[in-house]
Length: 265
Image (cartoon, rainbow, N blue to C red; front, side, top):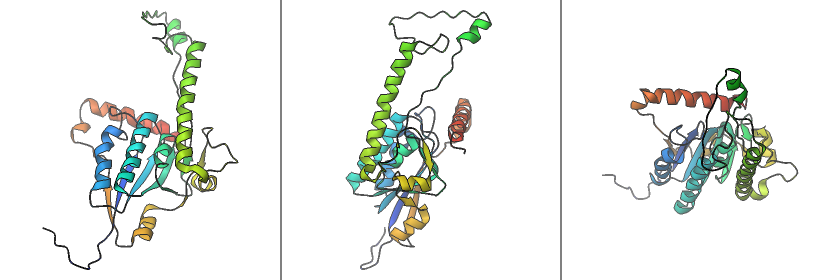
């Protein structure tokens, strides 16, 4: 039983939520709404925190999972009346930046990579390869669009146009989200939505983030040297080290390395 001593000054608590890695659905990674939902809830509720800090280090990934995570954080911030501060480590790009902008303030290192407000879809065309080896592929569908973007068939202009239209829809949603969250802070004299990315220092000038600053220093400056910092994040189970999950983890690691490599990391 914990006794409360009258007139004793209580230490403030800040919850730190680590969001690190590729943003992908539950079968492919740890940065997704299914995995993080209970952790995010706990970060806002446990210990009556004075603030929740997001420690972001992500090259992006699924726009749906980015939206779900960001919406959950924003909703809990309003419900609990708890401010959210985002701290960017190496990179907050694409979906990583989508999540970061839900914070009330965004802090970066001068050398962090920020931005990449765009949408991408990539694949391979293998029809020439299988033809070279005399492989005949047989596909039967009900529905004229069922085999859209089949990598084993020549590229179809209608399929490409349909895909580009979908990408534009998602891009428009992304732009609206950033404009809603950052508003008048954004520089109006430069195109920030063309998929480009910048260093943290430049991102401050463009209004994509608020200022240069690191988690420990800012938290202590805001909430005192004796602030209690509690870290939250997904934990790897013992079982995940064995069997098929090893292969899944290896595939995810390779995918993450490719995604981070786009930003020289």
